[in-house]
Length: 145
Image (cartoon, rainbow, N blue to C red; front, top):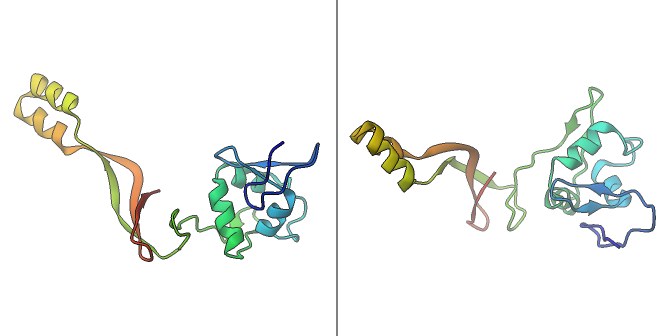
């Protein structure tokens, strides 16, 4: 039997479990703590969609911080910042810049073979990714989001 990632309670047989992006399970009580009891049934598509696109650590962060996410009348989730340090849970983080993939010797060699010196320079530059590097101002650790 599985346990709730946030509170550790064992699930009862046939109890509704909410699956996060990282395949962890959350119980209904923790979901009510996260989204409040005024949001009606937790089977609302937007809430289930939010859970399936976020990690259990993110949900735990909000619950531990005592934050409640609310669903607005247009169906959007309000109160979701999703930007916190994965090491100490602080929201005091600063962006360092866009993350770059490192140098690729294979790409540089192929660039030299195809385009000479210009190809070597292109191989040395690296490539931007969709991730951004951040630093936590509390613990000083760096992470990517």
